[in-house]
Structures are given as structure tokens and as C-alpha cells.
Image (cartoon, rainbow, N blue to C red; front, side, top):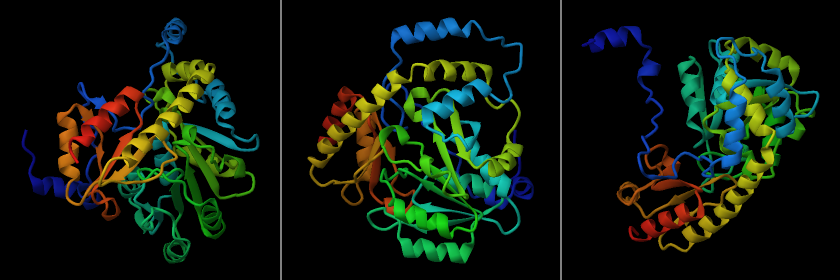
Length: 360
């Protein structure tokens, strides 16, 4: 089937044509350390109990449109304060999309640091908004003066701040975030996707900041296959954002599984604690390798820079050794020569470090 380029250009907006689709490589038999997943499987006994619970699902019926029971469990598990409202999404990506759709309009601007989570830009552009990227400093921290000037210049409808930041792994200075909350003319969304791996959070500040929204996801906790996210904030804001949510966006299977898994969240909290320890060991292993610049991380991944011009070769060499990580070289100027590795199981981390040592 052949479609002329002219026809595509006539029908598809130039902003969309200028984007690249979000690419996820097929993992095959690789040691998969590229997607910030929890590497630990569910225990067999938990899987057996879960499969038995699935017998209760009536797949011929629509799910609970409001996901009431799951909402309550997620509120408790994620520490949402009582006055706040919540919306559930098909992962936090859908919630980002809802927020942007709710504020979209002529001349509206979405702002985020650069580099940061690529979907902020992607969804903003697809939704027809302008996107303002504010460069981070050389150590990937927020420059208070630069972002203050950008807020004055662009007057964004929404600012996204990943906390910890993806792909750099660092926590921004909370005082700078509070200054942004005080100055921003619109909403400020603190995206806490990696909350299981740090004690830092803005969830407790929802009552004090009327323009603050907090995003969470269960993906990093050990439920990446479920695609469950939560948005918390003042009811007045969430009542409006709720209007952009498609009906039945959380399936019956996901609701039951989420309720069941959060009922055993001590299993996943222990896994998160193990990942924190594994992260520290992996960080030390990377720091012992010659020629690398290794950045501190409060997430379940580590960013590191290889010698100039070697990122592609190192990434390809790791693949040849059966290890898949993320090559960020070329994705943003501040990520030149950078690679990102997810924290795996100790034996996976050891295999990665061993393969990397042969390539430097």
C-alpha cells in the first residue's frame, strides 16, 4: 500500500511529522537493564494466590468506572493526604496526557527541565501546545535564576518536574521547587515515578500549595505490566482534569490485580529496599571503572558518561555481550556520551560491569 508523501503532509500536522515515535527495543534474550523495571519476580506463592483471585473477574461486564476500591488502596499505599482528590490512569503517561489536554489552548505553554522525561514534550506537541525546555546546569541541578526567568517569559500553563529526574537520576533542590510553586502562574506537577527508591516526596505538601499536583506510578514498584498511575491534588483541579479521562480506563483485571498486589505491598517494599542496596553496589562498581563520569542517583537507574565519542561503541559492545541498556547520546546536548543502566539483580549487575570493563 503506497501513500504519497504529499498526502501525508496535507493530512498530518507538521509538529507531529517532526516527532519520533517512542521506541521500545525487543529485549529477546538480553539481560534487560534499559527500562527502569523492578527486576525481581513475584514469589510463586503470590502468583498462585493472584491467579485464584482472577477467577472472580467477570470479563463480560465493564469494570468499575470509578475504580473505587483500587483508589482507596492506592491512596493508603502512596500516602495521599485525606483532603486531596485522586485520579487513576493507565500508567502515569495517560495522566500526563489528561493534564495537558485539560489546559490545552491557543498560546498555551508546557514547561519542563531539559533533559527530562521525553513524554512531557511528546504529549505537549501532539496536543498542539508550545513546549519550553529549561536547560539544567552541568551537574543536572535546576538553576533557580534561569527557571525563574523562563517562568516570567513563557507563563506556562503547567510545569512538569520529575523528582527524581529521569534520565539523570538526581533529586532537584526542594527549595527551588518551592520557589517554582510560588512563582508559577499555572499548575506544577511533581512527577514522583521513582518514589519507591527515595524518601523524598512532595505528597505531604499538597495541602500547602494550591497549584501543586503529584504524580505516582506503580510501574517501578513491581507492576510495570499493570500500567497503573495516580494523580493527586486539590479537588477543584482534579474535577476538571477528570473530564478528560476516557471511561473505563482501568480494566477489571488491572483493578483486581492492583488491589491484590497492594494488599501484599510488604513484598514489593522489601524488593525496593533490595534495589536501593543493589544501586549502591552498582554505583560503586561503575565508579571503579576507568574513564567514566558517574552521576549519583535517587532512582533505580544510574546515568554515566563514557569517554568522548565512545557511547555508540560501548552500547553496541554491551549488546554483543547480551546486555541491553539505554544509549542517551544524541538525545539532548547535555547527555552527550551518556548511557543509562537500570539496577538489576546482583548477578545481572555483575554481568553488566564485567562486560563494560572489556569495552573501556
